[in-house]
Image (cartoon, rainbow, N blue to C red; front, top):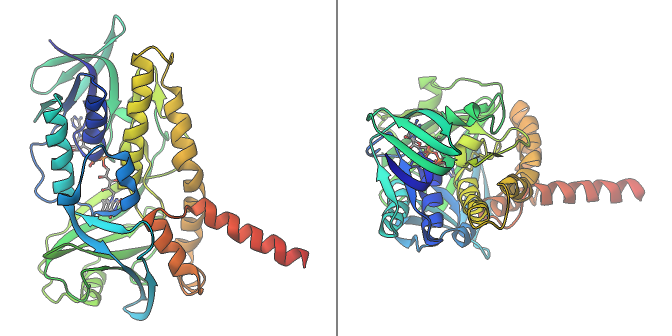
Length: 377
Ligand SMILES: Cc1cc2nc3c(=O)[nH]c(=O)nc-3n(C[C@H](O)[C@H](O)[C@H](O)COP(=O)(O)OP(=O)(O)OC[C@H]3O[C@@H](n4cnc5c(N)ncnc54)[C@H](O)[C@@H]3O)c2cc1C
């Protein structure tokens, strides 16, 4: 039976980045991934450049566009623009390339990848995890990282994250050409999608388009609406191949670690419930997972509790406000658009959230402060 200090279930963004962080610290790591390759990852690739501080490698090769403007539209009209050329820019990365870079670097650092192999059963024996896969092999480890994404089977098995996860329904497509989307601009399209929005993020030779609904588990897939959205982004060839995905979104403070086990990325329900941002929490959770595992395995900590504490502080505290904003915004989208986008400073604030310069919590505190001052005068 093959043995490693840490086994990671899932070789997506959070699995490979956790593997890389741990391999840099000198641990033996085995990643188990059920798929061989996925040609196009259903992810628009929008990423705050400030996140590179959580990545121990240069990802320049994966960056396809550096964004300077954010555009907002209501049913294809009403052009609202925000400048995004601040201190920390927003990038569009090709997710397949980013994941590949991370994996290659982790493999160079000595991690092992078992693929294709699906984890089917996990038991604990003599304080070690025994993992059974559908390739009829067993693997053994001291610590376990759950990184099996939004369809996670194992987070619930270990009672990690919300007992009843919340999902956004999404559609992803990549279309050749650029349509009406300039290379340095991302566009958000409101009004066409009930309880959600559509987005267009430019790559070098194509555009990543996403459509998502964020509350009430509202379904997508009405062809007529999708065609209107594509036309609004400047595409007339409607013979696209779309991928539907359910995306776990943030849904409260929950325990993200157990005894020698923790959960990272989408499996931990960390995705921003307002803007579907999942790359940032994947990289954050992978970074703090590796820190806590290191503390635990080197004897500096008795358990992995610090991991949950860090994620609550560094991410969930802001997501509380993201979830509140989403509930109001997507329930009353026209009012949300008028107040949240059309207000003079609003587009700039959304741009600052995307680039990581501000959090939802910062914005909420500013609004509360403004209201208090107004009420006292
Ligand atoms: C349409 C769409 C657009 C998006 N756009 C953006 C964006 O622009 N910016 C942004 O920040 N975020 C975006 N996101 C979110 C982002 O893609 C995710 O948050 C990110 O992919 C999470 O990575 P992960 O590694 O946690 O999960 P995944 O990438 O889903 O990886 C999980 C891996 O686990 C494997 N696995 C599952 N079960 C098993 C098993 N039993 N055994 C072995 N392996 C298993 C899977 O095959 C998979 O490779 C978008 C998401 C969607 C759906």
